[in-house]
Amino acid sequence: MDEDYYLSFGLSGAPDKVQMLGSDIAVAYISAGRGYAVDYNITANSPCVKVLGQYKGVCRDDVIGAIDNNQLHNAERRNDGITYITYRRNLISSDPGDKEFKVDGPSQLIWAFGRLDANNEPSFHDVYPRGSISIELGSKETFDNCFPFIQTTKELKQAWERPKIIDRTLRTLTAVLGPSGGKKGYQGITGMPSNGLAWYINGLLIPEVWMRRGFTYGIRIFGGNDPHSAEFYNPLIITDEPHGGVERLSEQAQKNIRVLAGVQYTLRGQPRPTSSGPLCLARHKGVDRRLDDDFPTFRKFNQSLSFSCEEGEPAILEVSPNSSWPDTVYYNSYTHSNMGWKIHIVDSLSIAHTSNGIKQSYSSLNLVIFIFIYFI
Image (cartoon, rainbow, N blue to C red):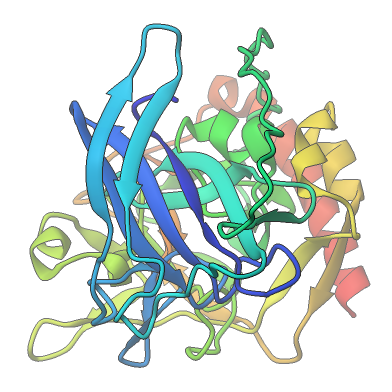
């Protein structure tokens, strides 16, 4: 397990099957030589975010007002590539948010493996069990169904094509949500972990967009406008750093980034998003998302998805880059991190600069037409 990966393990949210929602887990990892086994509760299938004053999602116990009852014993990363992290906790915890490990009968387990984000919080997991897993702590019969560890020899998966939108005449962009596309999608394009959802701009998965200073662009936003939803409330913002997720940052961390569009500040200096529209979402058609990496191209992957859209007009975010804007900025979500990618701010677009991009942009416009016909 590499430095920026985690392994989560705990009790399922359902007594008879694997269920992430409602589960009680430990998130274990090693960072800077130090081991961690942090107590988490899962109240929504999303990273931890504050929803109308309450934290929901994959949240640490100490964030939601509970107690971290895990006690780390030791952590070791061996030369053979195997990581050992040992911790303990009471079978019956005094914390009302913790589930009970049964001493009589089976307990349903869950586990997952994925990457840590920039704040050492678990992002969307890449590996998880296919079926039910249980443990019976009070069993009188001794049995061993473990199997040896193996090391994978698979080469790193090559990312899908890195789309670009470069068009002198383009003034309107459309942003909807869809799956991040596994290691060939968001992770492969950006090199950063994903939370499972990503922005699709004009039908393309997190394209790099070129904008000119002195021009105004309109972004039609369909990222969800229900603030009660921990997963599907995603106002679009533009910042000078690549992660977004302003809602999840501390006040001090918020001061270290520059929000260029999509946020207004109260008299007390608190950020408030301005651009949340109804939800338009691409979903898997009942296919195991672990197979996303099997698609050779984004086009093939995109054709496998099902699109749906809520009623209502989109939010319109007007963006007017000027001389104070950096040459590279980033579109992302206000509530969740790592959902978007780069916007290049330029003074002009030369023919040489746009010859390849215009071709890509025209194809992306065709995708937009297809999407709106489908939605209507």
